[in-house]
Every structure is written in structure tokens, then in C-alpha cells.
Amino acid sequence: MTPTLIPEPQEITFTTGFLYLPSPSSIKEKTKVIKDSSLKEEECKISITHDKITITVGSPRAEFYARKTLSQIDRQSGKHHLPLVEIHDWPDFNDRGILYDVTRGRVPKIEQLIQLADELSNYKVNQLQLYIEHAFKFSKHPAIHKGSSPLTPANIKKLDKECRKRHIELIPALASFGHMSNILSKPEYQHLAEDLGVGEYTSKRAAKMPEWFQGRKGWSLAPANKDTYKFLDSLFSELLPCFSSDKINVCCDEVWDMGLGQSRKMCTDKGSAGLFLYHVKKLRSLASKYDKKIMLWGDMLRKHPAIMKQLPKDIIVMDWAYEAKHKFNTIKKLTKSGHKTYACPGTSSWASLFPRIHEAEKNIHGFAKAGLEHGATGLLTTDWGDGGHYNFMEFSWHGYLYGAEQAWNCKATQETFTRRFCNLLLSINSPEFSKAVTSLGNITHPSIQPWYQSIWQHVLFAAPDNDIFHKETGMLTADLGAHASTKLLKIQEVFTEHAKEKGADPLEILPYWAYAIDCLICATNKLAMYGPGGSITPAKRAKLRKELRSLASRFEKLWLARNNRSEINITLKRFAQTISDC
Image 1 (cartoon, rainbow, N blue to C red):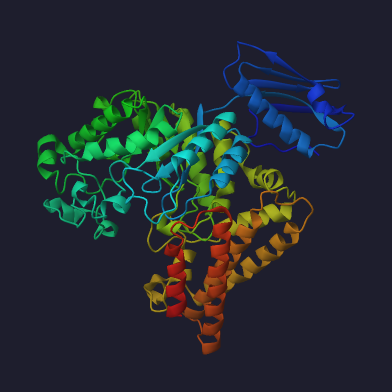
Image 2: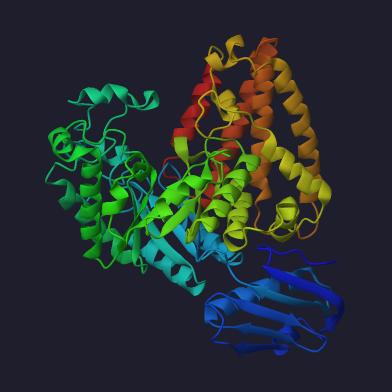
């Protein structure tokens, strides 16, 4: 059997024959490492011949990655032989990262984050970002992290050390403008908010903010408040020294209420673009005190393109969007400015009972292709936790590895990825199983709320009188629920069968996926009850409540096995309310 690899190498040729090994340990004895300064930092050549293994590299990092490839080949080969092969490999993107959200409700145990870094390194990921709003233990600001089981400086320093061993750069992503409701809604910090933490706006433009945003309080910091930068400096002074990286992602995305309250006059004087640029330059200055350069999301720059000409060239710009049909070539507008630029797709796992795999693949590949064409230096695949972080980290491994492969080799064979993923990460080499994984990821529909969500999570937690079950929505009928439930039961059978195989699922991911299937089945059965054409009886309601109680209990056990308790009650309260409503 020809070994399958992730990432798929740039150039690979298998030939007839084998290198025979007397024992598993002899692979080390048969390997010769040659240093070649003409090769780029992560470029390598691997040659397996009848009598030896030769790895040619230009740096220790390249050797590290070459050995990861060799390890994948070894795992899939016979007990005493390796196939003959010639590989010439190098990455498409210098920076290949995963961003994980530790602030929307779930804070993983430090052991889980170390395991994440360890496994990602097997697939040549070299950057890990942790997105933080309030889930860090700021000693000067104990009110910020109250109730969140925060990461501590010791946690970060330990993780940073383990990442460096694996050639991974650990970078903080700290909300530093918008997305700060978890902090600015607290009495101690309301005075720093653009709306004073109570929705107090003075500009008429406030009425034009997105409808979904209306009613949110304490969203953004006020640049006009003199205490804003003292506050940010105090956060930077505690957080940044924990990271050995010379970078911080200051975020600055979706600042919907910028200049509409406290900073209205400043915004009038400088203009919206000028106010944003003022804040970014202040952040750059603060970060430089700790020998850090800043990176920031690009949505506000797309909205105010004139900023790019005045933006200091040492700032990294990160272009993001998560739709399958996004116009990816718009990244050219950012890369042509001369700034170092990242393309930032997503795993499409948040606000869903299981990742929307088809959407994620289109989104990741689209960004990788456009980013490579237009000169982006990094591909950062993001994994968010909107709404309490219902989605487990374990759900996202398909997206993590797909992102890792696209960052290394955008031309990799997409059609075989899921089969290779199942073989390498789950140790299940079965066409039936990989087909079931694809089917599971495709049982999704556009959300009534059109922002990156699956309809089934809405159905699972909706009250019986919710608009989601009304005929006006069109597509959501009892028949749809019944049809999807039948498909899920078949997928469940395949998963159950293959999970029992010897050596399957070494990372114990499948119990989380089995839970996702049961949640989806519950949601589809609920639609079959309450959707147009459905039937509702007291017995069916009682059964639904029983299933929901069981799912809530399993959710808690799965969460606590690998995560701190933190804000688990966000989801447990949703379950409790749903059970009561039914």
C-alpha cells in the first residue's frame, strides 16, 4: 500500500522495492542527515533507497519536518520495510497557523493545549494563536477574569516552552478595540467604553449599526478617553512577557461603534479612518515597549482603504472571511500595499453541532490559492467559539489539518484529503468511514441568521413557538427532519463499527463526534415533531426532554474531561431552558 501523507509533499515519486529494516529502531541507524546551505529554511529532500535513508536540509527546522514525513511513511509501512521514494518538499507559506478561541466560554486545560501543539507540529504547523478577551489572569485586574477559569502566566510560559520545542511560535491575540463586552460591561471598566458600557451613543450614525449589534453594550474602547491606553498598557505589561514571540495580534476587528459615543468629536475631527489609524498607532507604540510588533484583522482596513498608505509597514495585516463563496482575490488590495499579509479562513465549526466541512474546505482552499497568488506570507486557519463555545476542539481536527495542508501545499489533492485524514489522525483506513465523515460534515443548511452558522443548532435549542418552526421559513419541514435523521442513523452505524477497530482513534476524538451525531439526530427528530407537517404528542415531548437531559449530561462530562469548568453554564442554561420549553 502506498503511504498517504499530510501535508502532501510538493514533489514525491515512489519506485518499486523496499528498504528492509532488521528492527524498528534501525530506521535511526539507516538515516543520514546532510546539511545543504543552498536550501531554504524549511526545504528538504528525502531519499529512501535499498540501503539507506538520506535527509538533506538547510536548517534544524527542515530536519524536524522531514522526520515528521518519514514518521508518517513508517507508520503505514510493513513491520520491516519502507517503500523506496524520492521527495523534494517546501512550504507555500512561511507562516502556517491555527488560531484557537479560549475566551468565549471554554478554556482548555493546559495539557490539552500542549497536546494540540504537539499534534499540529506533526503536520508542519508553525504558529499557534490564542484568542483572548477576558480569560487571562491579570493580577492588576481581578474583575476581568472572574468566573472564567483563566489561563495563568505560568500556563502560558509552559505552553510557550513546549511550542518552541516543536518549532511553533505561540502568539497572543488580545482584543484591544472592539469585542470587549466581557470587560467593558463590568462596572470597573464601563468608563472606558465608547458607549460608557450602557449603550450611550451621541451620534445619529448609531442607528445605522448592524441590526444584530443593536442592544450590545460595552463593545469597544474609546480612543478619546485618556485612560484607555493606560489600561491597555497594564494588560500588555502582564500578558506580553509570557510569550517569547515578537508579535501580538491586537485584533481591532468589527469596531461597529467606533467614534459614536465618547469619541464622537475626535471622530469628527479625524474622520473614521483617521480615528482607527490613531488607535492602531497607539497600540503599535505600546507593544514596542515590550519588543513586540503588532498584527491586526483587515476588515476595518477594507472598509477604510485609505488607511493602508499611512499604516506603518511593520504591521502585519490579516484578511479574514468565512464564506465558501467569498471573493478571495480581494486580498490583493492588502498585499499590494507592501505589508506582510495573512489569509485567514476558518474551520466553520462554531455555532454548529458539527463543522460544515464543505464550507470550510472551500473557504480554506480559496484563501490559500488567492493568498499564494497575491503574495500573502501566512495562512492562519481560525477556530472560534461563538455563543458559549458549544463546539468542541475535537470537532475541528478536519479543518486544522486541511488548513495545515493548504498552508504547506495549496496544490495538494483535495479529493483524497478526508481519506488521508481518517487514516493518519484517526487510524481508520476505510473508504466507507471517510465517506461517512464527509456526509456528516455536509448535513447542514444555511442559517436563518446568515452569518456562518448551521441551522441544526438553532433547531436543537429553539422553543416550540420559535419562528424557525413556522411555514414561512420554507425549507424547514418535518419531512426534512425525518430524512436527515435517517441519513444520520446510517452514519452512526458506520462510526460505531469502525470505532471498535484495534488501534482506532488514538487521540480519543470519536466520542466527541459520536456526541455530535446524537445532537444532530435529536435536532432532526425535533424538527420532525415541530416543523410544518410534523406531529406532537405528550409521549414524544417526554422522549425529547429525556434525550436533551442525556445530551446535557454528556456535554458536561466531555467538556470537563479536557477543559476547565470556566463558563460551561452558558450552554448548560441553554439546555435547561430548552428542556423547560419542550
